[in-house]
Image (cartoon, rainbow, N blue to C red; front, side, top):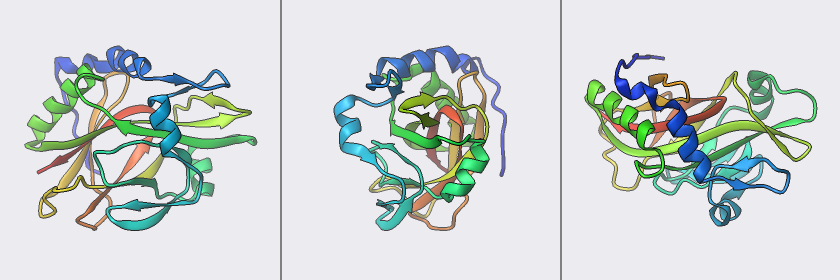
Length: 206
């Protein structure tokens, strides 16, 4: 995995990104939060091992959650469930859950500023940006995680140039910005490691 450190004032994205996401949050009955509008979340809720289309191909996602991103052609967690639980250090009674939805400068202005700075430094153009929260649920309550990662596959947006190379720009609370390489060879999809917790992930073409 190739990682480039991006040094810029926009790395102060942190708190502003988190607060911007919270504005979009919809409280669950358990008191936890789902980072997508409630009506959208209800429509996009997917169970573990459900079949979804990613880049036009049926695949199964191992992690239940809200897959509400509409600017990409589907997304799914590709790491098998047992490995997901091990990677995230989940305890008995805890089940992984993920929330994925589109974002833009209006929702996460500082995070997007970091994304754009990183894209410019890498000589890339952003084609879609997602917010992802990877956590767990225990007895109906959301559990925030800080360690581990899982592989997620995403279908490129309609009309994307499949002859180009795609990278993923990740911005996390705390200001850390990294550029991740595509882990698959399918020209219609991008696979990358999603870190535990909240992050912004931008697909960028080079």
